[in-house]
Length: 242
Image (cartoon, rainbow, N blue to C red; front, side, top):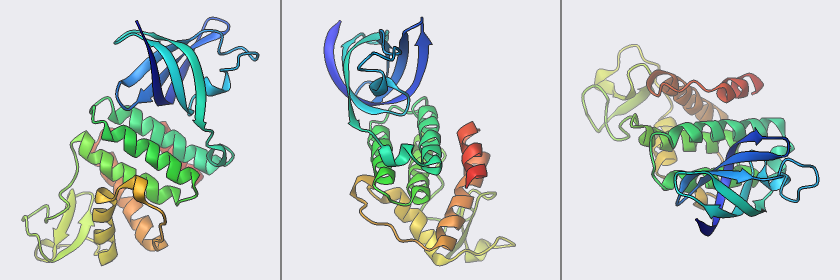
């Protein structure tokens, strides 16, 4: 058993007895750690708030690899006050948390943690939650092993004259292969590529026309439904809310 300090985000919590609970914390270097928090459910516990679901904090723990670790102390890094005071923003956070929890079951890439935390902090800073969410979604397609080609027509492989994108066909379509698909604005093609390659942490401002970002969001919704096999309750709730 090793005393360890880790930064992480609480994906879920499970009651344990009358006053304790187990939290599942997503970390960059250790993946998801299960942590026993003795007495943390009690109103008098100084760690009650810091061990709640959807909390970004630093944890001192007695670490047991592949077993249940034990909490020593916890300190919130950023309270995410803006997000948690807005029902729409908290719905985005809940969805991204549920999505990330599914993605890390299929990939152990450390970049998932970095991108996830960066996305949350950008939403907290006031950047467009839909755009940030779509950026994370397209990056996660790579981790899920179903990312469409960003450089060529899905039908013939041509890298030129890309005319549109279609979820049914599974990616970009060039002019020569175009049949009855709806042709999208060229900015949609450009922004989809940008979404994948951009460093979320480095984003300081986002200004994208509503029709462009809505087209991208609709495509990603349909693509996720067809190719990922993920059906998330938080996504349905978010759709109904927005």
